[in-house]
Image (cartoon, rainbow, N blue to C red; front, top):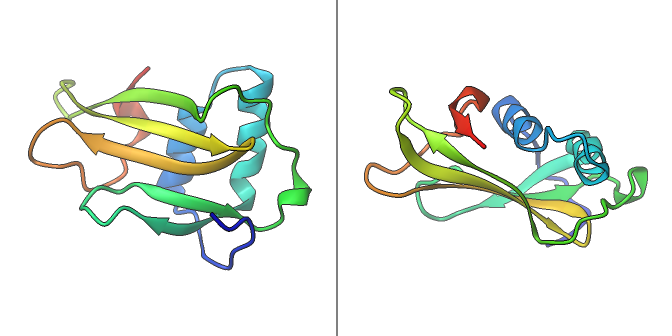
Length: 121
């Protein structure tokens, strides 16, 4: 992944989802949330899922987060009836947000970013 990109700004739905997934009051989550305003979309998954890859405008503007794993947050995605239908995971590489993955367990696939109220930690 290229740290410097001129890709599209994150859609509001992605910002809300990242903020919800990274809502823990830990040094790592606070540092990762500070990166969100600097993120750009650099790509996505070729399947119908709404997963996104990120790059940063100015990596020097915010410090790398003290993360111990590539997966920094995850939750179950619920349908409108409250039933589990998939998941959402946030990845970081070298302390920088790198990907938001949203996946389905069955058909039909999740094709839009879920709203934060559809997450079960």
